[in-house]
Amino acid sequence: MGDGTKLFRRKIYDEMLKWKKAKSGTTALLIKGARRVGKSTVAEEFARREYDSYVVVNFDDAPKALWEAVDNISDRDQFFFQLQFIYNVRLVERKSVIIFDEIQRAPQVRQAIKYLVKDHRYDYIETGSLLSIKKNVQDITIPSEETRITMYPMDYEEFRWALGDEISIPMMREALDRRKPLGDELNRRLLRDFRLYMLVGGMPQAVDTYLKTNNLQEVDKTKREIIELYSDDFRKIDPSGRISRLYRSIPAELSKNANRYKASALIGRTEDVDVMLADMEDSLCVNFSYHADDPSVGLALHKDKNYYKMYCSDTGLFTTLAFWDKDVTENVIYQKLLSDKLSANLGYVYENVVAQMLRAAGNELYYYTWPTEGGKHYYEVDFLLSRGNKLCPIEVKSSGYNSHASLDAFIGKYSSAIRQGYLVYTKDLRTDGPVLLVPVYMTGLL
Image 1 (cartoon, rainbow, N blue to C red):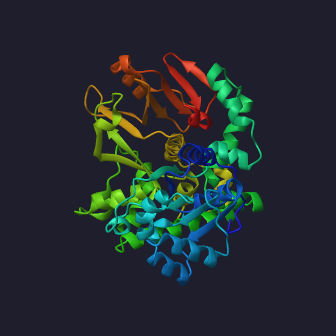
Image 2: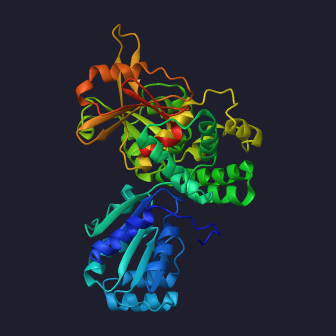
Image 3: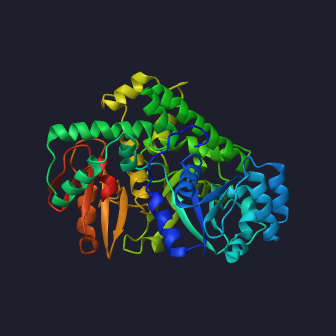
């Protein structure tokens, strides 16, 4: 809101309403997420609409008087008194909320949440990124009185809402339930709409820039600013620049079509690579997909931390990173991408957007590889979803090509464990034996 970005309808708002009703002030709400995904905006909008009054304490830009008040936070009467003076807001018992924005910059306030919640005068919402980075938590006890939710970039349905379309996704859901084709012409139109999402992405500022300018070159400038912000954050964690290098190399690594991301090839063998990867995962700027050594329902039990793939959490940022060598990704590249006429193999872009959509829908990401009978090649299932006591394997194709050898081999090998196999591709919805062929824009509904 403070940066002039338009307010967008976000699904997390409903989760916040559930927290307010169910917890009634017995926990603070912690909204985690990468920078610029809209945490502060949705927190303030929620406060404005659901409470009589509110205070936003932004620790990125807090006045000196606020830090003096924080030093005396154990004296809650005095702290609340000072807070109301500093922000010129009257707080009303059980009818006001205090937002602690960028809470990672004030570890002592986060630790005090336990006592603020117990005091029960007001509700509390914390927003933050890089929340588990060692230096942000090393001297404090993390409060158990937090209800934690994660905010992601706008998913495809939220993107359609921003464009004024509330019909397409419910109709897609109905088509998927009925398993009825949409027709080639409609599929082509829906795919073109979806490619716009792949280019713009789900960062609210990028979407806002698109709506205001309708110019993809301007959108690209916005995305580059966000990527530079992420790089600055990574340099604060790791001044050597290695984390930043790992992040910027994601498109190049995915384009190699290898069965894992090889960090050591980029930054050399180093003892603290595991710490760097953990910090990257904590930043929520990336989505990790781990190899499942035993593809059964308890995927987390068989996660191989040494075999993983890394995706950008936002495919709009990913597209900009993929063309980073040009100062600004020229509109001609964007227009060719939009009309599906760019000659580069863009399979890895589709894989990234599928990862993003599955993650936004609440799925942990896993994949599975195994050698063919001769042992010279590998089969690979791009994603594994756990549904009830069954698995749903997913293979991703960037074209309409509908062969699915890996998927067929996997279904044959683990038939009793499988609920449904999916080929995610660019053609119309249809069934091919045990496999459901699903247009990529329906991924979030699987």
